[in-house]
Amino acid sequence: MKDLRDIADLRRILVALDAGEQGLADLEEAARLAAGLEAELVGLFVEDTELLEAAGLPVARVISRHALGDMALDAALMQRALRVWAARSRESLAAAASHWQVQWSFRVARGTLAEQVLSEAGEFDLLALGRPGGPLREARRRSATHSVTEQAQCSVLLLRKGPLAQQPVVVIFEGSERALAVGRALSRVYGCRLVVLAAGSDAAAAEALEEKAAAWLARHETIGEVDPLAGPEPEALGEALRARYAGIVVLDRQGALTPRLEPVLSEADCSVLVLK
Image 1 (cartoon, rainbow, N blue to C red):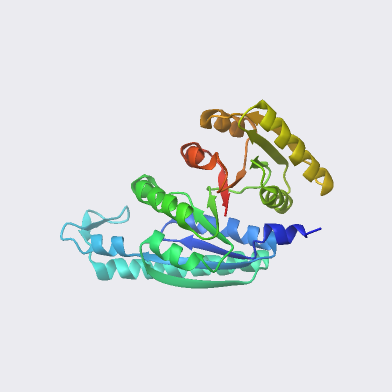
Image 2: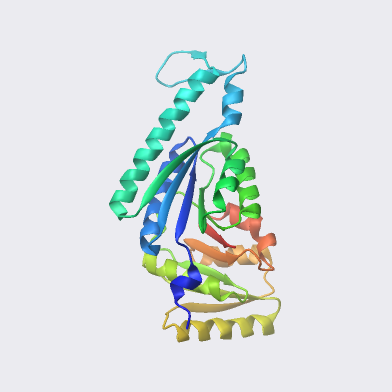
């Protein structure tokens, strides 16, 4: 029987970063995950060209809580700020990797987040992206995240802020054994419960998927809760995730439900792993 680690097959992890505190929190979670999966971790810091362009506008200003008034902002000042953030991100990655004892490296690229991440992601098994870091960046980051999730040639993990331990891993199961294998691996990494939602188009389909998932768990000596979910609408599935206090949701990109779930999952207070 094929080894579960071969099924999960998440050996190289790329974590995408830009300027902001949220990215530093993402590094700790990514390092912990890499340690649990015995994977290599690579940090990619993107110097956002849109920020550099905006900084060159005559009306651009720096507003600081440490100074009275504001000061002019130019591309050179923004470039220096981005270099500081890149150095800080590298130091944080080094510290997290040392703590979790994982192999790591760090890269810097210039461009838009989506373009640079997509150009790099092809050589990785998993891409980790943080949620938006604040209201002013939310719309741009959400758009970039959507583009990357849709186009990346690897699995994509959307990290929320905060640790993932203790809350269950929830697999939305539409027939993919790989989703079960990855869910099982994550539940072991985080030491938490595994919950499988057998999502079928109707009651009969959900029951058949429930039986298939239960048989898979038994065959691999895995303890997990399996619940049928018949013909779920996105709102009903969102409620099911909230009722189970999901810490991370695993689903297959090719699943019939996946395109309809984006609005629900983008608002959910949990991480989301979309498997290629």
